[in-house]
Image (cartoon, one colour):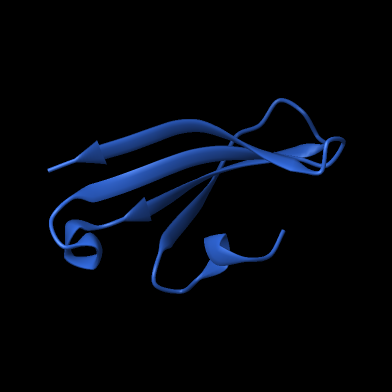
Length: 61
């Protein structure tokens, strides 16, 4: 899967996924990158649906 999630300014990690036809990842933006708040987006890409499902959006200090 290409696009903004592979941008080298972001921290991207793979997460375990129970379905072999989907990929789960977390994108982390540090406070230095966002101007004050850390942001994490946990998402799953489904090959069957050709869609991304955002599971969690976490913003903190």
